[in-house]
Image (cartoon, rainbow, N blue to C red; front, side, top):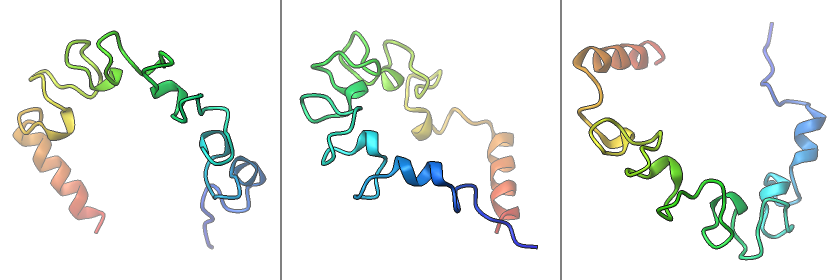
Length: 101
């Protein structure tokens, strides 16, 4: 038995893509609905007051002052903080990665 990927032969997925093989709403060349007058993604445009921009004029999830989701308890980017993971967490991650090889 063979398994198909989630989006194989899915008409809905094909309709969401433009001729540039991008998500139509986010394609600058096609003038997608998520693109603002400054030719940026509307939610991330500082000039338009996008929803992803905090009061400190930063991307909300990465703002230390706002305590964004990408900031750990050590006030660093979670993905780059070596202190955010305990020794046991690191061992678990290594074992999971090794089992997938």
